[in-house]
Amino acid sequence: MIKKISIGLAAIISMFIIQEPAHAQDEDIHNEVFYQILVDRFNNGDAKIQGEIDIDDPHNYHGGDFQGIINKLDDLQDIGITTISLSPIMDNKEKGYHGFWITDFYQVNPQFGTMEDFERLVSEVHQRDMKIVIDFVFNYAADTNPLTNDPDKEDWWLGTPASDDERLSETVQLDLTNPDAADYMLDAAIYWESETDIDGFKLPNVDLAPEAFIKDLTAALKENRPDFYLIGDITEATMDEAVDLLENTSLDIINYPELNQGLSETFAKSDNDVSAIYDIWKEQGLTDFYKQIDGFGQERFTNIFSENQRNAVTAWTLALTYMYTTPGATMITQGTELPMYGGDAEESQRLVPFNSGDEDLKEFHKRIASLHNEFPALRFGDFEYVGSEASMLVFRRSYQDEIMYAAINNGSESAYIDVDNIESGMQLKGILEDNLVRENKEGNYRIGIPRESVEVYILEEDKGFNWLFIGFIVSVLALFVIAVILLKRKQKIREHQES
View 1 (cartoon, rainbow, N blue to C red):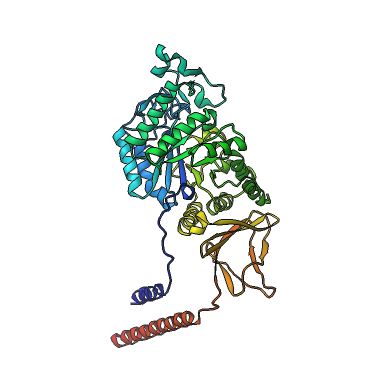
View 2 (cartoon, rainbow, N blue to C red; view 1 turned 60 degrees about the horizontal axis):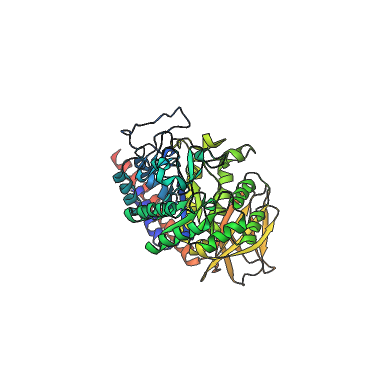
């Protein structure tokens, strides 16, 4: 009986709790949360595919496949991922687990499954209202690709690229100033765009190709499908060169290594100034640059901050809050949600250890991603610097009538910042930690949070205490207590009568 009364009480109270309406996904690449997957090193879902698998060899295939990705789609959606981004999936030469040693630009790598398996993956992604993009390698082919030995195509090639990138060690670079070579690559790109239902390409080493080719390639892809996502990954370009590439081609967004490095360095250690990252953003106006803190070819962020004796939940809470509440798309590297460790490229590219992880971090990842996907102001609102104090930063996001503030304290001590341009009679309601900021006697709104913590606020009218609701709750609780007392008294009388 008591259990039934408790359930009824919860149901009544829930009727008075107003739920925020869910917003539909916005069809804009700048609002996306990408999850970057190295297919062979993600998850083995189809044990029947053996082929070249040797998990003891860091330079060979380890068994990740399309089915393994399908098996994890619900988990990815649960942490707010809106688009998955796959490493190259074309057929590769032996040990080409990374996808850059392409032997056939029109065939899928059998180590990952069949074309039918890939199409099923795409379908499963779309059934969850998510998107999928793939890396399209256009600068290089494997040195064993039949095209490289065709005497009629001798003038297509520039030789082995001079690079420390191991993925390019067994490739030959295409001369994309050659019209025939350029047409071949353009045809291959159109094939994958037209024959599959993918949502876009990520173009590796886009800055190492002739800009004229990138302009023609991206224009043709957009002409066929204007909503087709085009993401550029730069390797060596300066910021000015990267901006020129964005302006002169149909690329939608591009990476910015300096910003990504800044994110890692800032949150790897307590008391680093968070406003330094904002200064980079302000200087360049990086709305068309996606944010990423981890990568496959480097030491993992988790390793870096662990060397500074920093807690994983703390460091990732700070970093993820910045990434999810500032303008521009976010790229999450596979394993971040666990978090995944890796001291170098070899360790960072191992199969994701899904049987491990920190539940508190996974839960926070869900919460901050949910905020990003729920509130339009966090996706495409105006971005305004409010102030900084020590290692704490506060900024404002606004869209139409929705105004939000984000506070990030990377310092080892509590800090506060006074906001003096909010009109009287308002309040800041914390969403992550239920903090509440009301106007003080000086007419300011003091945002203060503990050391190494975050909060996201929404600006709303200060209506004071909801005495009607409080009175209702008190009345219901009183009735509940009375009911319990009466029930116990009745039970004692019955027991007395029976004895």
